[in-house]
Length: 235
Image (tube, rainbow, N blue to C red; front, side):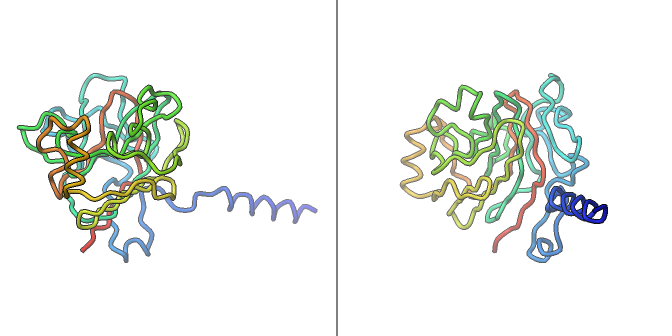
């Protein structure tokens, strides 16, 4: 009986263990060309948009890069040092109750732009059960913010980790959330221009025009966490 109990305990431990180490690449991922954009211990490779602050409000703890919303110092959106065009980009996120944030892409850094959203479209990060924005169509978690709503809702509740993915391949885009493809769209064509012209971004002449740019983690004033941020650039 003791041997059976020990065996069952061992099986339970194996089944409850993480399927992969956080902020690490597997041998197969390395071979496929994936690269980490967050090392799990520092903000190396990230910076404040337009150097607006020292970005000290973005901190690292327990293997996650998070916004400390309790401080007023070092606030602002955080962007990658590098720019990217065609890629498969993956990241995990979780949001505090009633929280709002976002992952923006194709962000152009230039002093003439006041914010990352002036140029970069956004994959929404949101507590769908608590934040008022969730009442607005195309503003819910996983949506192409204010442009296209998710085909189905796969987001997990506030405080739980979500696995997200953005694929960009020569103007063709896909959003994935928790293993489901939830949004598809084409950028830089007439249909895209018409969609933007009928959105809140219509007064921003350079919104969604860039074919490449930085990724940005949005400071929307709420506590938010990111981890397992990685990219595979496509040829």
